Length: 316
Image (tube, rainbow, N blue to C red):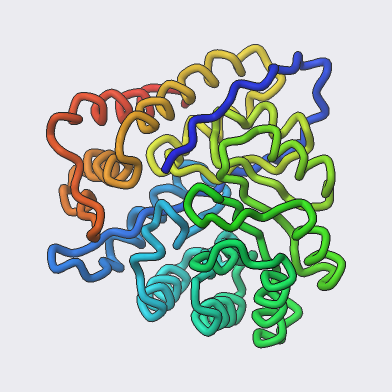
């Protein structure tokens, strides 16, 4: 699920033109109760802890959130609970893309009605090899049904999961047909060349990498930052890396951040992230996953301990 990232050439500070405000969003995990129902109380507590760590915002109901194991009603319930608990809606980019068009419409319409910053919207992903015009029609149907000028869509490119890539030509068609609606993209492909091509072709988009290891390259090229699964564990140090870009502190912080990520790259991602959350909160309930996932086995306890120790003992 984690795509191992390539290592593009690092730019020297004098060669960089940093966005002064790169951002880190966290695809917050979805806690479950022992009966596998969603746990709104722990969802809120963990989400607030991530914001307290310095995250700029949250991107709930993405891949790390087990979104496609959640019903439409559960996603609506949790988003309402989060905003009603006092989390600012304009710090949220909830996932709203589903295989079924009516589900995508319902989730997107509800999210916009709550005043979110934007929606992170997958292309319809069950049918493969569909024409790009069909994908354009799908997004158009969502936009028309929502019928709200506040709608801002962040595209979600994760072809290893969906089999339906967000290509440059698709982005071009969508932006031409719906000016001002498509404002960003999350690239979870792990392919820096693809991320870089999006940034260069569409500088007006906020393009996020899914790997914090690519933050220096992303921001130097004109990208917006990262939306990273391991920010569930290491948000404080990821934010510290962004603030240290172009300084003498960058290399040391980047090394620690990359080490944490590599630990998770070697484990089943979602169970490992939730095991780390359980350790962080001293609450084993956070480790509960919905099938088809299974809880991380105890044989990986040392790796989780190492990752959480690095996260809590790194940059302040």
